[in-house]
Length: 129
Image 1 (spheres, rainbow, N blue to C red):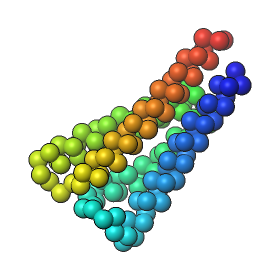
Image 2: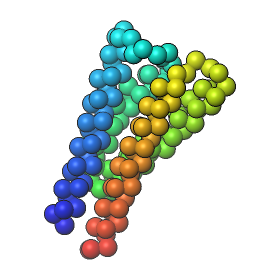
Image 3: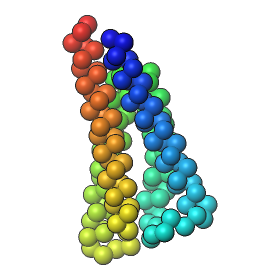
């Protein structure tokens, strides 16, 4: 049980740290830093706002496996939908940089891993009870 709690805390910490990094990077670009590629402003605003959601989801995961799992699932689905949208825009030649597609892919994978980890822990903890 102790190892489960440690893993839960690690997953929660990853969510919070990922949120902080997302907020930092997004805020820098919103304030005028040049990332070196075309910025699709709606995506920048979405990602920066999601930084807050990532932090909140990390805190939820720290406190509750069930709520953390639900938050991670919701974030994963939202990121996947945005990835599909910007992937389509990129494929049709719209002003979306491939770096944005790669970054959104990374975000989606991170939140899939967090969801799977939290879901596994939640299922494991109910099996023990």
